Amino acid sequence: MAKIFVSAGESSGDLFASLLVRHVLSLRPGLEFCGIGGKNLAREGVKLLARSEELAVVGLWEVARRLPAVLRAFGRAKEALKDVDAVVLVDFPGFNLKLAGVAKRLGLPVFYYIAPQVWAWGASRMGQIAERVTKMAVVLPFEEPLFRKFGVDATFVGHPLLDVVKCHKSNLRDELGIEGSLVGLLPGSRTDEVRRHLPLFLEALDILRSKLPGTRGVVAAAEGVPKGTFRTAEGKGTPVLWGRTYEVISSCDLVLVASGTATLEATLLETPMVVVYRTSWASYSVARRLVKVPHIALPNLVAGRPVVPELIQSSASPESIAEEALKVLKDGGKRMRSELRTVREKLGEPGASERAAEHLLDMLDGPNFPRRPAGHL
Image 1 (cartoon, one colour):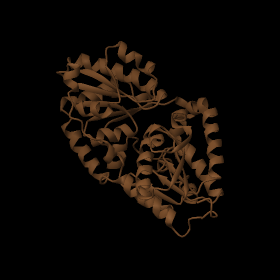
Image 2 (cartoon, one colour):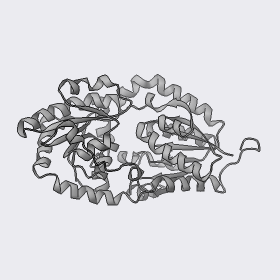
Image 3 (spheres, one colour):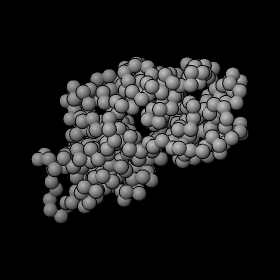
Image 4 (cartoon, one colour):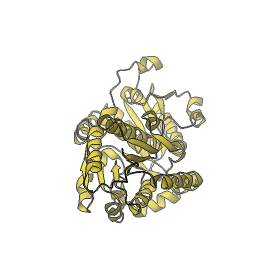
């Protein structure tokens, strides 16, 4: 039976990869998986050669600091590819596109689930993907025609968050003694992101409290981020909750959220938001010259127009964040909730992981799938 290498370098990728592996194994129980990931892939029986928590960084300086760990993981992955039959890559483009090149040289078929957002950088890397990737399952509706235009065998399968995100009927407000407006703070899933965003969010919250007395805040903390990173929030009397992200989002009138997967989670829960992103100036200077899309917030990209405010780099000051938040809170978020409902409808139907699993098995069953000698399969 075939052996498959799977690479997911971030917490969200680990979750989505684990759902894919689960559905693949339900359809083809004998397959063997090894690779790079976190607790979710480990729970599905994947033999991990490196942990995604060691690799989840963004920005030039941030990557430089983790370079030894990244290089070690890449070396292990390269060695492992010599003894597998196919490769499954999940997001994490800086690492995974290089790994796709190694797989290509070894003649291995490559299945890419959750496309790298290289379309944001223009056409320069699309040819590279077409050359290295055998089949791609994309999760944003506009990605299929974009990738197909450059010769990539891409299919829109819907977004796996539709199977994960559930509205939580919660007593969180009662638990925290909240009577006024409740603002959720979602500063990111990586330590560097939290360090950049949480102080901004807390200052913006202070401004909101001065304008709207009775307003309270609550932080949704991502697993894997050291608890000490949130000490400032706790010192200000703002509760920090672990493992309750959807409950926090569902209970809030508004969330201040770092750009990323959490913006789609808030979209699916129809919670109004202000999207913020700050990175190092070196990373921002490079990105500003290369990025070709008009928006960074995923709800705006899916809608094809601005439906949520997004504040980037120097425009993301506590004052500007509070100003945008006040606009939303004063109308109860009615307009934005309606817009988010429209975005949700564009994300497809539940069942993305099952559909992706079927496409992966189609690739493995295809006539061009290389077969190793008997005894290896």
